[in-house]
Length: 110
Image (cartoon, rainbow, N blue to C red; front, side):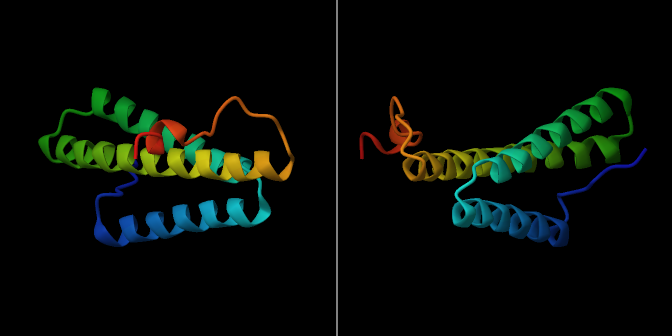
């Protein structure tokens, strides 16, 4: 079965660069759909890891999949925060009325 191993350092660096470029592109174009698509792709990747983990029983593969799931959770968090940031920028650009700032829950008490 094919496994996208993001626990290797080379692959992880490429994925991080891709994520940062997608967030930067979303910020420059002021469209939150770009980081949203990357977030959706990471969620699909997480789902595929969980399905593979439930099907495969080899100890080597279980270790790799566990590392990949942990890294994927960090990528999802990073992309989600980037999505909220770009969404706030696009709401200000379009002068949409928002209930609160998307990142207010994170920075509100600081």
